[in-house]
Length: 113
Image (tube, rainbow, N blue to C red; front, side, top):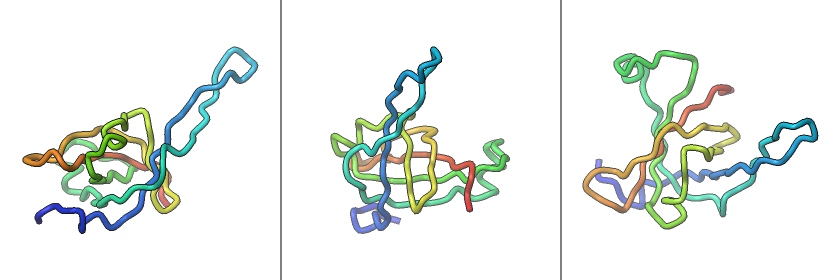
């Protein structure tokens, strides 16, 4: 399938954490939205693909593709994605081969309804 902006048919929210002192010598994570929601393509990784990669666990692994804008390139694996009420932890980010126009974010969710 050819990847173009028309394939980006989902809206995701990137969130970034700041740490604030908890008053007991530790820190609490305080998550806040990083900019406005952005368009993305979503593809869940199949069970057979996960087994071949040796990652059989109770997580939903998903690949999101977004435009490679300046704000998109600022996303790190310490950020997270919220999509349709589900929180995804970012596992990796890479450029989609042969174009520099898109980024693929591999993420996983632990608690999926």
